[in-house]
Image (cartoon, rainbow, N blue to C red; front, side, top):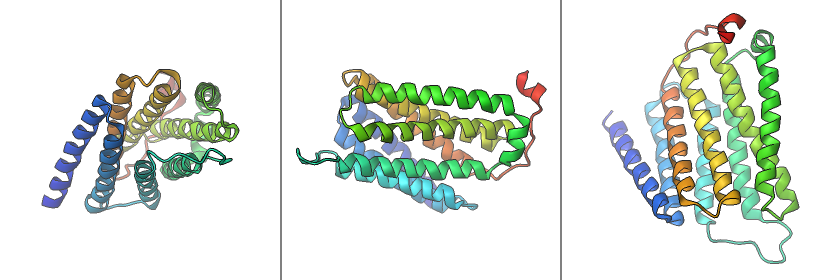
Length: 246
């Protein structure tokens, strides 16, 4: 218990330091603190959570690996004659794979067949909205990216985060528990952070205010992910169609 408190206080202090570096525009230092914070958060998960799930473990490990990798390759650029930016590809691959495992974790929490039969209209609307938002966000980011292969990477990346938030919403409707609510809020913050990060890099001229907002959302997402991981699965209370509409 004492070790858990020490880890918790250290993570809080590092999160504040991370936000401070971001607000000052010290991106390299912020990347380093963020990577260290996620390493400690992963260790805290292993120490304090009794019922660990392999898919959530893999999500944490891969997301942390991506952040550490981004820190060490922050100032590295591909050669002028290189056909591919391997730093960009490897870093995004780690993030995408981590989201795949988080999506798998969300799917493991519910009976997807029952959810499909109970919420067909809602799922259809979410799918339509997800496709629209995915293409819109991808077009915004690629407009400033001259690499042809980057379009498919960004498209797949954005599709994953939209699938993640859509499934977490369906899971909340299916379960209606505190654990599913915390997971949904965490996924929403992840999506917000990703969208704002796209605006920071591709739309605005590196507006530092957006960088700070992105950082706050990212920290909030992992706070809720940690909170939901501490809760045991509760018996689902599947909402009826009339309750969802109300």
